[in-house]
Length: 478
Image (tube, rainbow, N blue to C red; front, side, top):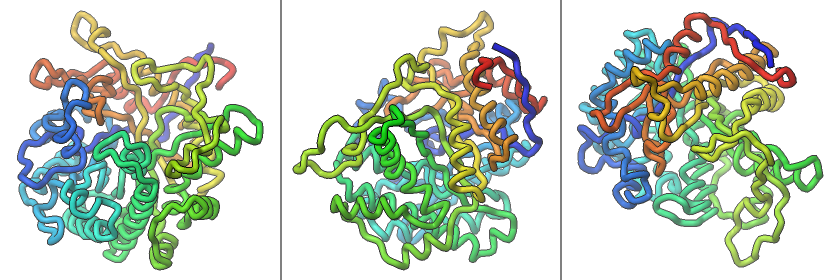
């Protein structure tokens, strides 16, 4: 073991992230403004840990000034969140803005800027309006693509002079994978056809946003449109050809389905061929493909938490069962792996470096940053000291190790723009609610949502001030 230090470039982002639906709560929400997570919570509250969900969340809607002051205290240079599409409009078809909610967004952005924190805004972080899911099937419909672009146009028009970094989606593959591929979330329907249609329409919607943004001249003002993806760093069990193939196909269906069209402007040929071979029905036009080809994103955020490991499948897929990409792989658990037992996830900080190398190899001109990384721990109150401050040294170590690999990759030429923690405060997660805590700031559910900085918040501030990361590493992994 040895202590190492690595400088943090002056322009390197040290921020944190959240979303509207996981923080705001329902205060001020009008009838008909439910989002997909709201609808899921209303229809199936029992699956949310201890019944806690988006209704109250962290009440950021009322307490944003307090939270933004804590962001400044914690040394954040940037804060990424979302505008809640379902609340920004009163009428999704006529694109009528809810001035009450828009005024709240005005205030949040102004407060961030006043404190010297740059806002980075997603236009959809799972906040598909519930009525559009019920009426059109959500992203199954090309109509929803058009409505999303019109909504984005209203947002750009109002805020382009204040916000320069925009993102179409956070983790655009997640909702349809959980709902339609694996049927694990409301409305629990297995349909690989719908899964791929949602994928395509989100790719198309992103390209159309880039096109709109550029046509309106906002790019010339120094603005950008990106996307936040969650590609999993996927390792084969072994170097044997069948395991390598399993990892390659997993990557094709879950990572390259968004990476390639959004960063390169085209779907992988092999993906198109396999979808056709397995009769996955999704609809697109040559015009769609041309828009995607011509309007790739300006930057990409990458959410990374844990490695994904696979092996060759041990059985044949039954021909009477609808096609699922899982026919190409089985999950693999590495013996002796380091674990976050609270979350059930492997800890392997080098995924940051391996993703950086991939970005340099496969998408060399694309600027990117770590948009989410963090560790969720259950029952953190057990780590409080006599002053009531959570001594989350495990979080400090987790951030330091992952940040080290990002900085090392940057030194070697990777176009890595920065690191953002998930999350700034503890917040609600789908189903998990507040079971596992991720924040620099504790949210005390028993004490009127009192905010208390954890030990990690002070460490993050020191990191931001000193622009130097110092940590202890095993000699064989430096």
